[in-house]
Image (cartoon, rainbow, N blue to C red; front, side, top):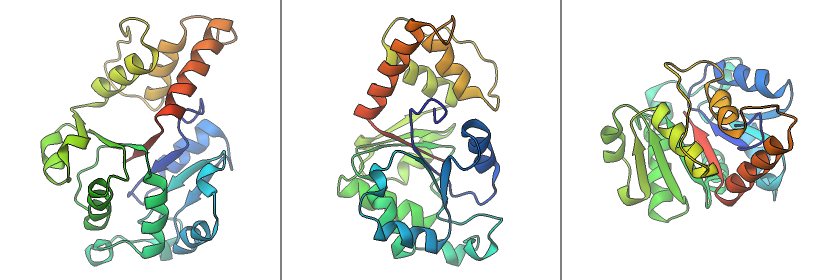
Length: 219
């Protein structure tokens, strides 16, 4: 999705750098701005319109392993987000659809922020993609604004149908791969030449649909 410019924001509470490396592999080095330290978040609080900048962001409120001082890996460190991080995420979530993939809602700080933003209706909608969605839904406020999908296959099939609306989805993948999302989107965009006019038209339509209902992916 990032590779085709369909989403610009991702949030992870994991402090490993597997997602960082995957995004770099997809977009190229230096194409995604990682926000992981308290100083990174403070810098954004001083910028007036960073969320309008046409670039990609990866937010890591619990830090990243290559910067040990940024890590928030102990229980007592995850009871409440630092105010700078909370401010940035509030701005990020405003009027967005938040897609939670594999999220357990175990981290008290992020769960509190989600519930706060749901209660004040700052987040447009939350989509939970998880095998056991009931457990997560029980921990989030305003369940009517939260939708659950029991797996990635179901979610991405529904996403493709919603964005295109041009017939049944024909993908048949038995397991997720590193380029799982890319394969699904490209399968739906066009079975032919990526340089074809049909591909370009569908890609532009897909981008417009995402702009109309912005998505943030979190894991």
